[in-house]
Image (cartoon, rainbow, N blue to C red):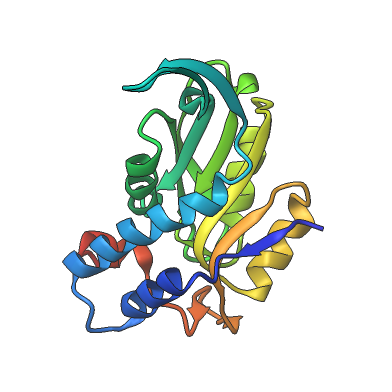
Length: 209
């Protein structure tokens, strides 16, 4: 079974509630998403490998520990994943960035790829895939399947919201990929939207309809 990590820190839940409100402006939604993504990064990177380095404090030399940010890749599922990406890069600015362009066919709800650009030497890197919503799971499943072709060291998936249907689909397709989310909502409706959810994340981030 894929491990689902529910990030239930009070600050994460507080900001998510503010984002859910229909009266939240584009500006506030974007700002809250950035802050929430920063907070979730702490959980997602909890087991990132560290290395010992020699430094000098103002008082003496010492051996200290650091992460190798260049070995970490944040992969954004376009376009809505960009909102999470910005917050994560604020915390780990040395991380590399990949992009997967996918759109959901409105009739079949299947994912259609139109763009794919990754850093080199992916087999040496740990990947964190980001997308605000894990709804039908089709986009996330397609993105992870494509990434596995490059044989990265590990893959994690990060979203703001998901639902039992999304978790089940992702788990069935990729049981080895951990899911990090701030909430597991009640259900997926007939239009492929998470309920109660927060609407279309992409539209709310970019002010489009």
